[in-house]
Structures are given as C-alpha cells and as structure tokens.
Amino acid sequence: ELFTDIRKTHNQGVFDAYTTDMKTARKAGIITGLPDAYGRGRIIGDYRRVALYGTDRLIADKKNDLLQLETDAITEDIIRAREELSEQIRSLDELKRMAQSYGYDISVPATNAQEAVQWLYFAYLGAIKEQNGAAMSLGRVSSFLDIYIERDLQNGTLTEEEAQELIDQFVMKLRIVKFLRTPDYNELFSGDPTWVTESVGGMGMNGVTRVTKNSFRFLHTLYNLGPAPEPNLTVLWSANLPDAFKQYCAKVSIETSSIQYENDDLMRMEYGDDYGIACCVSAMRIGKQMQFFGARANLAKALLYAINGGVDEKLGIQVGPETVPITSDELSYDEVMSKYDKMLDWLAKLYMNTLNVIHYMHDKYCYERLEMALHDREILRTMACGIAGLSVVADSLSAIRYAKVKPIRNEKGIAVDFEITGEYPQYGNNDERVDRMAVELAESFMNKLRKHKTYRGALPTMSVLTITSNVVYGKKTGSTPDGRKAGEPFAPGANPMHGRDRKGALASLASVAKLPYEHCLDGISNTFSIVPKALGRETDVRSQNLVAMLDGYATSGGHHLNVNVFNREQLLDAMEHPEEYPQLTIRVSGYAVNFIKLTREQQLDVINRTFHGSIG
Image (tube, rainbow, N blue to C red):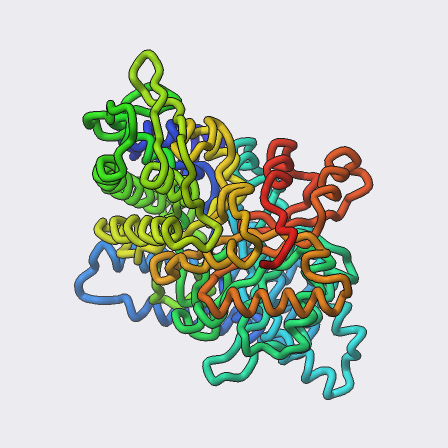
C-alpha cells in the first residue's frame, strides 16, 4: 500500500512519462532490459573514503559544498544540486548511526587493517541497504587495504595468516549480499548476480604495478572458501604485470573459472590508474564518475524492421517507422543497408529519449544518496547505452552480400524466415570481410547515439554486452538472414554465434579484438570457453599458454575476456546431478554464476556455445 497509494515509485514515474512509441518498443523488445522496473545500479561509491577520512570529515566537506552553492542566481540546476547535497549529508549521518548500532565509531579514520576493512564494509553495507541496483560494485579496494595490512604486518600487530583470514571474512560478507528481485528481472539476469565487482591488479600511470600481496589474497579466497560468483573478481590485465601474478591468475582461472580479465592498457589511457569496473565490463574513475545504465537496443530486430517496413515480425504490428518493405525474392545488400541505416537512426533517437525519461525519474524517486555522497561534487556522467545481436547482424549482412538470401513471407507479407543458398564468411574466424561489418556497425550506431541530447549532459557511451539476456533477446526476435531461427538465443555480448567460430581460439579472439574500444567505452564482453587439454597436458604448461593467450589478446586490442576452462560433459552431468556440483561456477557475459542456479534453457545455451578444442 505504501508504494502503491502513498509513495510514488521510480517505475510509476517512468511509465507516466513514457510516450506511446516508447511503450510499444519496450513491448516488442527492440529496446529491452531497461532499468525502468528495477534499480539502475552501476554506480561505484568510493567506499575507501570512509576508512581514509571518517564520516565527520566527509560530512564537513559536503556542507562546505553546500555553502559554495549559495549564489545570487538560484537556477534549476543549483536547486537540484543543493537538494542532492542535503540528502548526501543526511545519508552520511545515517551511516554513522548505523555503525554505532554495531558498536563502532566510523566518524574518525580507520587506524589499522581490521578497522579499515570494517569501515569500508560499513560504507558498502549502507549502500546496499539503500539501493538494490542491478550492479552494486565494490570498486578497487584490494590495493588500498594492502597499505593498512602491510603496516600492521611491519608493526607486528598482524600475521599473514590473520591478514588472509581478514580478507576471507570480508569476502564471506560480500558473498551473502542478496536482493529481492522480480521474475522478469531474474529472466534477464539469471543466477541472482549482484555484481560486487572488485578490480584487482593493473598498472600505475608511472609504470609501477598496482599488484600487491592483497591482490593474491583476494584471489586466494577462491581456494579457502571455494569457487563462487561473488564478489565478481576482475583482473585488470597488462602485459607488464608481474609474471608471478599472471601465472597465479591463470592457475586460478583454470581451476575455478571464476575470474574475468579486462585490458588495463586500454582503459588506463582513458581513465587513469584509479578506476574500477561497474557491473560487468564498464570502467569509470572511482568517486569522480557515474553512469546512467541503459540496457540494450536489439540491432537484430532492427534489421528485420528494415526488411519488413517497420512491422514487428513477432507481434505483426507497426513498431518502427512505416516504410516500404522489401518485396524482392532475393535480398539486395545495398537495398538492405540503405533501409537499415535509416531504421538505426530511428532506433538511436527513440532509445536515447527513453533513457532520458528513465534516469530523470530515477534521480527524482530513487536517488542513490550514500553512493553519491562518496563522490566528488562535480562528476562526469555517462549515458551507458548498449547493443545486442552484433554477431547476428554481422553474419546476416555477410550472408546477404556473399550468399543468396531468399525471404520466406507469411500471408501478411512479413518476412518470417530466410532461405540461404551458398556459403558466407562468418564472424569469429578472423575474416576481414565479415569482421569489418561488425566493426562498422558498432562505430555507426555509436555515432548515431552521439547526435542526441542526453539527460544532465551525460556523455553517450556504448557496450557490446548481453548478460544472460541473450536468451531473452532471442525469444523476442524472429528468424534472421544468417540462418538463426526464431526464438533461438543470440550469442552473448560480442561473441561469435554458437559454433560458427570454427578456426580455433586465436581466430575467434582476433575477430572480437577488432571491435573499436573508442566507440564502445562501456565495454566489449567476450565469453571464452576452452577444454583443458587444449591448453596442454601439464598444469604449468596450461598456465603458461593461458598467460600467452591473454597477453596476445590484450596486445591486439581485446577489451574483456571471461575465461572458462572445462569440458562440456561436466556441465551436462551437472544438469542431471546438480547436488554433486554445489559450487560449480562459470563465467557468462560479464559475470560469474553458479551453473546449477541457471534455468535449464540458459544451461543449454551455455552448453551449446563453442568449446575450443585447440588454440589455433
């Protein structure tokens, strides 16, 4: 009753402001997964500040910010900023009182390692009590905490065993974070992820590694506590990382499939050396930047709209702009591209306008007070758009150009299936003919997004990421010209379609690495599975080969890699005997998940993906 009749919610505000076109597009699934019925998340509070300064200092700084906004001209922006600062101050005071209820005084800085971990955890706990965002990431705390731990080790007030135990206990707390979710949410983000993402390692701008003993301690929790999806351990990979650390990361990946890797050499040039990963693959400067999460636009469905004159192939209704459909017996590449380009113009505009509505209402009815209290007053905001179906479209356009594609139409003249004659180059085999199409599509759609006005002047960015929603997007999309049938899943993220990357692991990685990070600053997700024997017979050889593969992928410009090392037979057995695999963890698009918690449909999708049996 409270959130139905008394207190208006974010969800109600959004749907009050949605236009007819927005509601129709959402229903059809050409824009989907939108944070209009759940917390947007993807904001990283700088939780280190509570340990470093204490809440009293932070409150004083925010009060000073408020004084700076006592100007002659009180504009709408200043009114909003003053209200938000007041809420931030209030949230910091509530955080202090919450810690007091546990018997701790966090008004002052932490004085030792145990207090630093405790203070930092209180800050994070306050954030997750206030928000149930889709991703409540932790930031980059391992190297920060190492300073306190190392000092205590040198002083003799802490032993190495106690230091590891402290991190183990902290990680146990992070593993039990849970939110109440709706069934629709769980369908999009299967396996109950919370994205408590911790960024480990990386290099400094001065060329000195950010790897510390505590980097090893965080990874070692996967042995002490067993594999688990949370926290979402993310190694910031550089060819210049210490070799011992690289070898240890590879060993942990091979034995647990619980780590993801992101290219620090790419991101450091854009964000400096104090950034973290929000959610899955999205980098941002900690405490100085936030994003407005925007889910994804379905580029594969947009291609079908271009062919069918804006009519939805599943619903049979007009969703896109009414244009002349293609009626020829064979699809012409030039005709399809001309119509597709115009359809993407429409989609980019509608998508951005929809996100503007969502984030206006989220700020109004579900403002992240505490997380934003742990940011600077002046921050960079990004409008984090996303695309799904990249490999479907690339292969579809390749089929149209290099083979013969005949539309199969229903009684209403809607193309509902396609007949392909001949072979065509497929994305994922390091073939420039089709890889170039994927690159140009990503760059083109990002440029279309950049043309539109954004809420609060946010900088438009884009991800190639689907989470486990590739199954849902596939359900909402009819048959496509690449041969994929109606309802079949898309490939996750930037991955090639299942089974089409036939030339081995290195060719598959090379195709994905070509996607331009400068046009996909919100991240390019690649989920990679390889059978153990493909990496070698001996444990040391496997680690060395995986390190070489990661170095090569990063050096060639690849942004992100989930690494799974197991046999398909193991997953099939886990489906039939889940009680024997309580901690079986796998990497999916941007996060890790307990395999037995996936729906059967999503388990089958994972099993049907390419398992590389050779490196090259």
